[in-house]
Length: 485
Ligand code: SF4
Image 1 (spheres, rainbow, N blue to C red):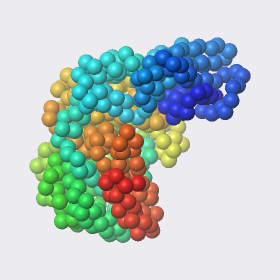
Image 2: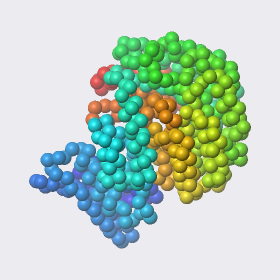
Image 3: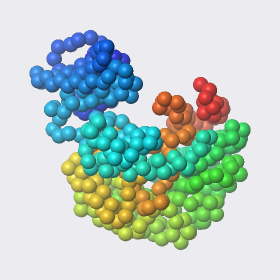
């Protein structure tokens, strides 16, 4: 679908909205006026008013919309908002129904309500912003607001100079069919992980020195993947011992390790995690329905999750997150309801409800597995919201993904006072995230709302082959945090 910009260069915000509202029509930037189907987004600067207008033509029908702001009030944010509003309102008559997230096209729809609260706005003002300015439905605004409130609460625990630290273990015993992460299946051959672990320990050592010399405090620590518990108990112990000795964790609020799959969890590894101070863990069923797990290539059953849960409780790790996915092949609203009820009956601190998003690289794309349609997924997501709210959980972070069918989102739910702070810091970009390992992405929020990313090489082999460069980049990352380029 063509898009022509007239009188402005705020391409990104309009393009993202077009892609989100018309996902089946490939984007085609136009560098001049055109005939036929497409969109024109224009901005006119008058003495008193700045006028944003959009004109969209599809199959010979044209709709237009206009939004204005006073010239003296112009800021980048207000100008882009007017452009998005005009585009959204012109697009609305072409859509089968108003999209739940209205004119918000980004992956972090809570950022605006959070910014409103952080700048002193009331919860009512934040909700009004979502509903009246960005046309978000009441249902989605009700999800977003508690997340923004949880963010404000977490932000109050942070000081300038704080960072969160992420350590990535991009390995799993086998690959799930829907997986789109960089994760290598290594079976039971944990020896194959040795070179990676050695490289990671070097990066950890360099990072520890940089944290110390730049006086940066680690506020949350998260070891994710892949599945970090793919490492043997001995390897885990070595990693955690080094983590403790290389980093000052005196000010760390929480230490999370994703255990993910039950086929990587045993009492010996749990004892190691507990001994080195891990106080949060993820045990992820995705579904408790055996046929669904089999269709996804997960080599475990629902009963294995219950066994892992008992082992985690016996090890004394109290804060547990459990992930579920709505929309898995072979699942149904009834099956999902059973999974959610079974998991919720355990009362883990957090339950994260994802919606299946298939990216390039996911095996499910090449299988003709029947997947629930958007209506069935909507039923699942709705049930999760109602059931979890009724059980005392509230949403504490959420994000959307590209490739997500429908207008769904992934939502982390928490019991009171048990939110995972790392997830909030990372998702809401509250402070720098220093990331280590293959595929890891460090991020530094810059003044003005921009974000500078420092990616490590994607695959473990590339990571090891260019470790020297990775270590050099760590120095650049810390310099950027100090205001350098
Ligand atoms: S456990 Fe997660 S990271 Fe590992 S293969 Fe499955 S989906 Fe991918």
